[in-house]
Image (cartoon, rainbow, N blue to C red; front, side, top):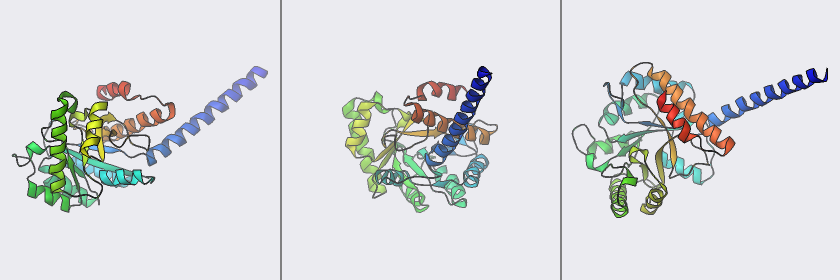
Amino acid sequence: MKWKKGILLGLVAVAAGCAWAVHDFLNFRDRSVPIFAYHRVEDKSDLYSMPTDEFRAQMEYLKENGYKTIKLGDYASRRKAGDSFHKECVLIFDDGYLDNLTNAAPIMKEYGYIGNMFMAGMYEGWPGYLTWDEEVKLAQYGWELGSHTYIHKPLPTLPRQERKADLKKSHDHMLGLYYSPNGVTLSYPNGAYNKEVVEDVKEAGYTAGVTGLIGTNTERDGLLTLRRVNVFHHKTKNLEHFKRALYKAQLISWMNEKTGYDFNRFLLWYYHKK
């Protein structure tokens, strides 16, 4: 009978452990901050263009699930102040496409949401990209305007002096366009960075930076090496892909926090495989 009692106690312990894990993960989901990364919001069929109806469905999902949006600069400032977060997220848009103003911003306004546009400086005013005046209009929607560097090349591939010059040029360009008491924020081209790049980003005066690492963000994540939730156009069941991308990002970061091991490199392969 002792062995039966031992099995019963073991099952109780496993059930209790599972219940704790579920409760802890749900709590983590609410307090960690996802940064959803978009490019275009337009009715095209490529991976980086989210159709407007699908984008609206994603915003509706966030609203129905109690999420509020914040600017990346405000997130960094509040982190430094030791604030806690609950059901808050950041929506970022890379490159500086015109449809961020004409399509994304009006849809987001319907839900009381604001975004963060990261301009690749050399594209400013190109066909299909925002002009200086249009960026100002985007800021009037309450959006934050940040840097995607000037020449839009992966920073680790540049010679260090060229990288420093590009980071400074883009920083100063955006500061001249959009003043924030929280400073200039950055989205790394291709999400690429290394230790030396982060040192140069810090030296250039940026206050927050979003990398290509998959995950959601807590006080454990460096403000210059923040994680993202990539949002891609999958042509079918985009809302399900959106939900799954958020869940996977939350799971990766929760596992990182519990184990102290960065699962991102392994699970990044699995994420893209799916």
